[in-house]
Image (tube, rainbow, N blue to C red; front, side):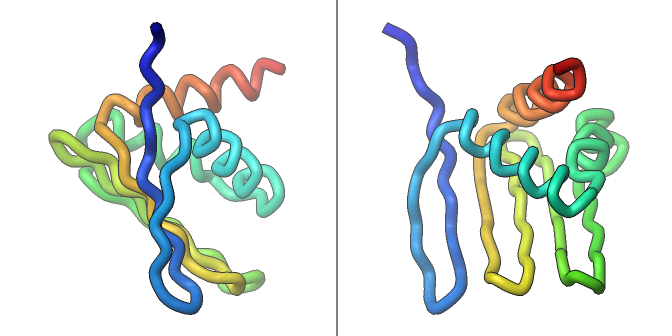
Length: 109
């Protein structure tokens, strides 16, 4: 039986809401934001894998979008917000490699 890694998601708009989803769903969501808003989300996250920095962020003013990612020994934190609200995702550090591979495979298609 295969194990499924779950990612904790916190949505902030009118309060706090916690939910769990799969890593595949997280990858799909990040691909959606990267392509719809023409943002360097995966390039930013790939820099984290070099371990020369432990966090990166960028902001776009119009339309508003804020992205933050941090990698420590055990956990990856991804946070982004736009005019619709804020979302925060936490997952184990190995998940970052899966997300980067997903981005590379997505470019090949």
